[in-house]
Image 1: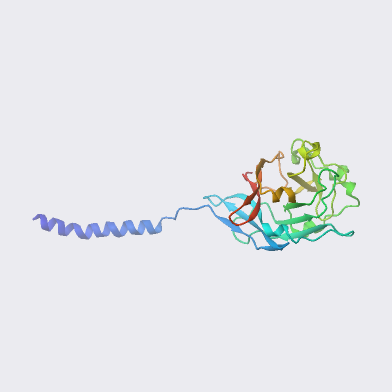
Image 2: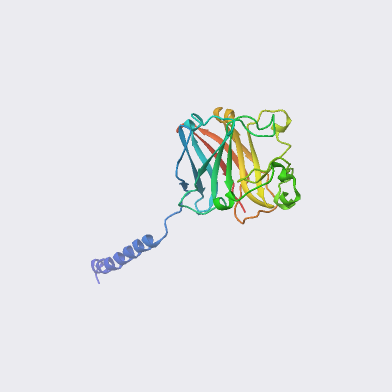
Length: 262
């Protein structure tokens, strides 16, 4: 057989190999990529706020946060004798992986709140609720001092080391608040940002980073570790760190719960 004949016979075989390779590539899954899913924007002040969930290449949530446009800090409601706390419901993204967070409420504290000389400056409370809105609305107390009652004190395994739930922190439609008295704001330093845990009926019901307006307007690049309890009331991944940052490119602030792990 001539060499030309051998080559002619090989062409159909090579064509079949090429087609098979192309089919295999078409059937192979595309490389996964990290993604960010954004929630519906809500009007706050002269700007907006929206939630987001960031995933890794495997599609697992690694961060949850809220983005505020810089203009959201302008035109906020002014305090009156009857009202100085203004809540804004911010829904979680409709798409993307589910997380332990059911919804977010950003509370504008026009005059701050107790304790005096600690958190009594204008600031934003970012409530990341682990329960439904219906359950949140059912939270009720007879007095703000109910947080000191044994029935509202969380079990030790749900409370991070160093945190306490003092009297005077029971708030209807929220819960009781656990604070870290070792924080710098409890020792004469200006309040900038901190991380609080919230409970109701001895269950962990929300995560609450807070940031003062003065701190936000300083355009921070802040990050800190989050003290974690030994266990959680709701299974899932929780933050080991949080950050408060300013993005000069799009003039916005991001408050982010990061390093989500079980």
